[in-house]
Image (tube, rainbow, N blue to C red; front, side, top):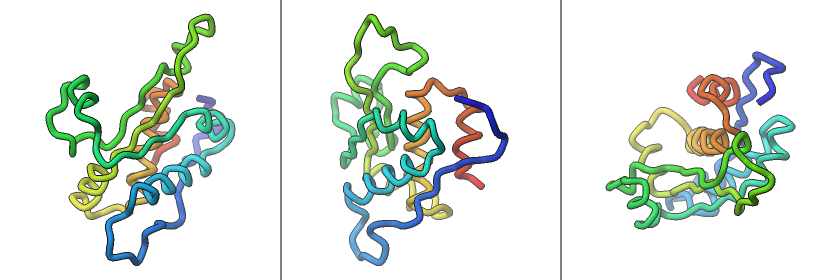
Length: 149
């Protein structure tokens, strides 16, 4: 991460695609919020983030939960699968990196919190998972993702 500025540059999606609906936000709505967060990132992060696939599922698959040692699927809102850029060996090709977002777990956390917008929560989870791809430290994540403010 390039530390050219101490100014926060948190991406903020402007609209919730399912606003005004009586139905819970769909998988497509969660994906749209994450893509808006990606598109709001500052360069060069925005360009690099486009190389990471995004997959939105209702809940984490059982095999994924088992591999992670997680019993409660509602406790996993997002996951990065891949090799951080800081660890990639160009002589050892890897498959594509993927950020997973889990709709029902995200919605449960959003409702339980009750103090932040869904777009802000999705942005926070997406940026946090993207941070794993970039190999960012917690301090670097805090400069990009100031969702709590």
